[in-house]
Length: 541
Image (cartoon, rainbow, N blue to C red; front, side, top):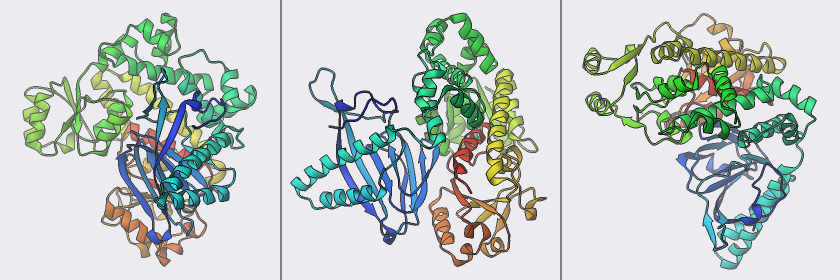
């Protein structure tokens, strides 16, 4: 059995859990690098990075993989990982199942979802001791002996116990402590929470906690709590049928209905009844970019292109099975839209053929977003105006600007005036993104310095590695495409002698970013990108 203290970051009933090893793999530099293709996990996965670095995409969130850290993913999570630069110590990949005791004591049942209390990243008290333990576990498991595997099961549970115990101790990493407090309020938002409760979760004094929380997130802790509560209320309002407003308010921590109504309108820019009415609209996201616009307005489309990576993501993220897939074939797609019984379509004007437009207009309303010469903010406002959600767009944008300003202020002391080059690695080559792309977040919203060579370029610029070597940029952010050819190209570049000559590489100022969910030029994806930037340069030098 797994046992640990009663720290609030961990499940309250750890003594009722049992862990069972399924496999343990040791990966070293002889394999070059290890990659886990995007998949929904069937079992829990523990990843120990004894050497090397990489990235982990967990339900669409980017988590940098760092040497000496342990990462925990759970069943049902959309997971993708890539580890490179390993030495002979390599990394260890452990799959296991979690069983919880039935309330009536009749036995154990296998957990099919990840417990939100478990930390995603843990630090071993002694990385060397953990490495030796992993080697021992791997050796015992590979022996095939029933007795050796029985011993490995017991030692594995002891290992997880030590990791959880270490994670429960006071953190010296202030950002981790603030994240712990934020996670605490996201788990306990239904209850009455005071600053003292949140400061205790962060293991800080109340005064210091309030000051540091606002400095990091741009909001006071209580303002952040209110925003999270209203987001949860919006989720409940999308149920069919929605619970009464008084019940929804009570479920999210606002038992007094009048106060809940006022708070809802203050935070969303729309009255609760209007939000419920709008959320009942059946809207088709005819083109992939529309998905990220609708999500910023808390709208889940009733149908969307099935080939786009967002499709699987929002089904997982928003727990909805009501999104009908749209084919890439035009004739099939038109038939699917007709059978979707939608109220309206949101589409991109330049991606429509006249035939499609005429046929759709014969039986459904179309909101055509003018894409050329308009930025993503205009796209959001156009869509919101069409759907009667102007107030929601205004408040969403104000919140975004505040978040960007906070992160810009945080990055200034470390990044300052350093020039930053964004470099996309695609299946066909290297590209410096132009305007109307994710570059807007870095050079516009965050005020970072674009290299002089690209100061006047508007469109994307194709690059060759020798051309890149002639540039003198302080920092590089490499965005690796999701195609297998793109990943292979990036691996070849990273070991090239020419790459090693770059100023940013020599000073170890190169970061990578997965493009799976962040390459769209939309409101929601840019908001996600701000979160990734905050984590990406947290430890920069």
